[in-house]
Amino acid sequence: MGNLGVVIDDRETTGHEGATILEAAEKAGIHIPTLCHRPDLSPTGVCRICVVEIEGSPIPVGACHTPIVDGLVIYTRSPKVLASRKAALELMLAGHTGP
Image 1: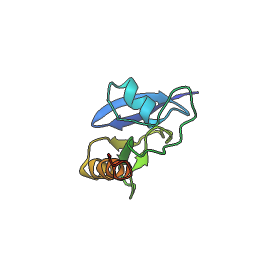
Image 2 (image 1 turned 135 degrees about the vertical axis):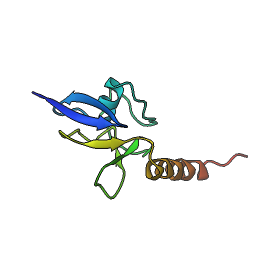
Image 3 (image 1 turned 45 degrees about the horizontal axis):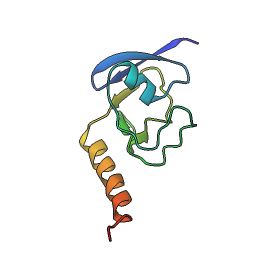
Image 4 (image 1 turned 180 degrees about the vertical axis):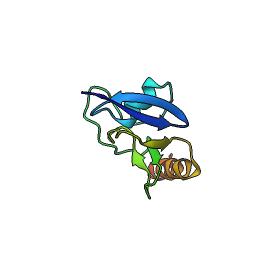
């Protein structure tokens, strides 16, 4: 398995074939928030908090389950990403009102 090169937030990094965006970001020291991600479980991307923007893609993708591809350019804090995370969190909190 060869190394694949990606750019995350203007930082070049590499990852092995099959690695996720989240794993490549962690390797580069870039924090992507998560709620449902657990290293001992298969990633599902249910919470949508780990979304990132891939250059050229129309919608944000879940970093915990999206594999890297050589040459990807990824943004973890673009306005589109932050708005998507905020909306996901607001939806989660809307169903949890206090007494």
